[in-house]
Image 1 (cartoon, helix red, strand yellow):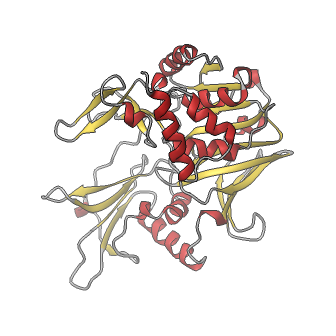
Image 2 (tube, helix red, strand yellow):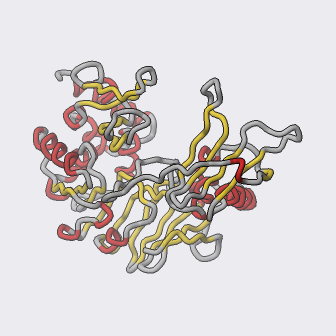
Length: 382
């Protein structure tokens, strides 16, 4: 690959223009790391064949690899959309550089990355800080082995470990910064314990699919606290040992008396802060989707959880203009959406910059505007 440096330089310039990269040290890292060595191929879904197609950097994938694009790099068994689907991805370079800028590292910083993936973020960190100050853990031993080999080929030798990222890396602690390139439903307390006082955690805290955002949390004594980023970001959920997704329950409308929805037709996951508030009241494993009309266009909205709770909202209104909703199970999922919508409206349609998070050994809370004087939601036990 004789022209990768030109492509890396163009990528860096593009990220600078987009406002996602500005520090000279990180600009030099983007220009100096051969991303194609760490992402030699990726997968794209082909609707015509209903299969994931492997695209190599040796063929026509090089421009994509050096663009501001997120790429799937590992697909589960079956290889079809109906199968297990994507298991790992490399995030858009612009998201990673925005996070690295927000991480506010110094020359002496020791950084733990949760979610090694392809090793690209680790390579950027090594370029900035040196190998001995960079640590990374991923539950996928195959990905870790591949990343170790590929990083070594470009001259980077950070400490890489295959293991459960939620436990951190106690044997190498303490760390000045912890950056998670996967989403977590709560802040694992092990991360806080392994962080220096005054240190920073940057993690995507999500209560469900698309229900959360990046939070920048500073440690002060026995707690971490901070605000969510004003710009929404989305990572794949952290994989845990023996974890399986919720199985969709049978949604039998005939067994449920419908009612009129108070908010009409909506896809609440398209309103990130409103959807986040709904998710705070729902089980953490809630998933969503749309049925398909005969023309294969999205039709009715549905939600479901692993405890068997489900809700379905009709896309087409009744003659009165109202939309019907059917719900069943321990959790009335659509009621949670409706209540969250009302709270969001009463609060003045808040954006992410108004939300914050506090985590202590006994309690984790999300708050609006102020951790003590505003609206507070229980997130989970630490």
